[in-house]
Length: 289
Length: 267
Image (cartoon, helix red, strand yellow):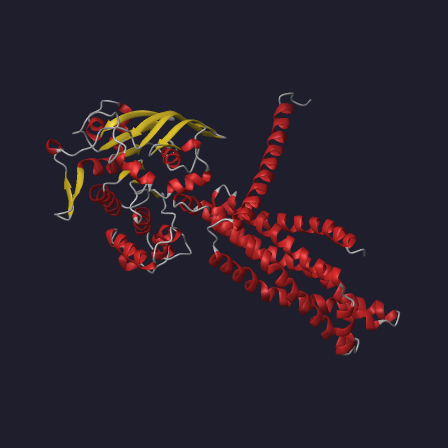
């Protein structure tokens, strides 16, 4: 699968690159020249108020929307130059978790998770194994035969994460995965994203308006041996990827991009965000208290 | 005195409305062409097509049977008085048969199917749009036109002639029952005349029309469903619009189709 190889085998190149991207609707422009990069194994958190264009960025990066101007490169592909047929093929190599889960109502949990595998003509035994494995990963195996309508909001998100991860994509988009959930369930979802990142090496973009999600991902990692989430010691961050500005190893694998009025307002690590004197950034911290 | 500033805004509003209509027609044409083109290239969702045939065909069977039993009976009641005046009650079978096979069978079945299934298709696809299930399908690398539209179009085009055949037969049964009890027409007399009056051209009309009506209803319903905007309220609007637009277009096209087919068969 050439696209998948590109995701991990192109050294020195970002996995995602937005170059002066604009998009707008009847009501006016939403994004006015966004540029940023996401590097392999990085978790990029898009932080912004409702309507700031976070979901639009995610959908453009997944080829679900086309920008009005500018270019979007993902895994070495210029998405604006691709036909819808090529984009369908491209999307088989990414995972996308929608805000409300977007599970297919008429299919069971197992059928939802197996959807992509069936489309790709996997053998039924292989599908069964993979579906059970990924549902165990998100701790939803007991609900395998249930329909989405029988699940709570948090359970639906977990199944949606399982559906996105079942084919082990190298790149996963999470669109407001904790929106509307209680704090405990939100923490469970963040833990699952940490497990995906730390156990499967997934590169990800996560849209949120909750600064707690950003700090949860930036300050913690999932320890496979301990079987739980532990706090990252910043002094021993030895195997971290490059930062989004391309600088060398040792930096945080989790970086924030704050959106404001259609533009990139801040880009940096969680610690830089925390210690910034900027008043607008402080409003996010105040809202989390 | 009219405010001069209103003139350009009115014109631009009309212009925008026209542009939206033209865009809608273009999107409908592209969707219809794509739905047909998908039949000839893999992957083809045969199971989904069979499932839709069951939902549309078997699901509509009861209302078609009940409706046409009544329609056949009413046709006899309405025509019997006139035929009795001329002492031609024996020709009742001819009238019922021609009316059903040429026109009422295809047109009324299409209206019933539009009422039941165009609304169902538009609301189902519209709900999937609102809850991002169609986007999720695209994100999983599956073409929604291929997975959702083509099976519904193929299913409806295939089951419509079958439903019309059932409708025609049931309508004749209804007509016969009423003719037997009110006009004292015998079974042999009624059925022989009802069958003998039909020729090849009538059967072609009775088959071609439902094929075309099925295509119109299913493509308009899918188009309305896929263009839903504005949440659940938009789903309601699309559902109503799907039934109204597909029914009206079906009747308009029926007029031209009837003329063309009558001309082709020298009637």
